[in-house]
Each structure stands twice: as structure tokens, then as C-alpha cells.
Amino acid sequence: MDLLTEVYKICNLLPPEQKYILANQMQRSALSIPSNIAEGWGRNSPKEYRQFLSVARGSAYELETQILACVNLGLLKNKEVEKSISLLEETRKMLISIIKKLNEQL
Image (cartoon, rainbow, N blue to C red; front, side):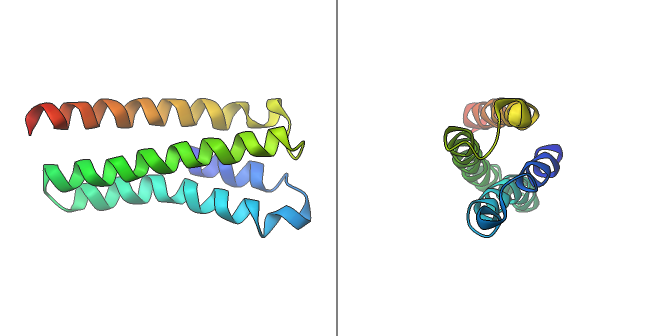
């Protein structure tokens, strides 16, 4: 959820013409991560939970690409996205760790 909050903050820094295109996509990717974690957990099935965690991990990679694209296009500065990238890396590591543990159990 911290990542989602941070992404919304950096989206507010984007130029107005990008708020309806790139910002919307970034927000959707960021929202997808905790949403898929929650939905998978609510399924009460380790196999389904693993599948939803995999979707969340994919959304994390998608979000990283979008953030880096903003930097490469000069829409955001490295300093502005540092916290988002850090939270994203932490989230991805946690997802990978949980998926690995579930794989060992199944």
C-alpha cells in the first residue's frame, strides 16, 4: 500500500497531458499489486494464492517499466522516483520470497 501511495504522489508530478495516459496506467499497475495479493489471500487456496502473487509480480515489473519510461522521457527526475523504485524492489523481493515458499509447499 505504501508503494501505491507513492506512485500516486509521483503521478501528480507528471505534466497535465500525461496524467490521463501514463499516470492512469501507472496507477492501475500500482493498484493491481495489493489488489491481487488480497484477492489471492482471500481464495484460501495456496495454488490460487500463488497465481495471484504471480500476477502481482508481473504488475510490479510493468510499473517499474512505466516509472523508468517517465525518467527516460524526461517527465520525472531520478530523485523524484527514488522512493517508488525502492518500495517497488522491496515489494518484488517479498513477492518472490512468498511465491518460492508456496512452490516448496505445493
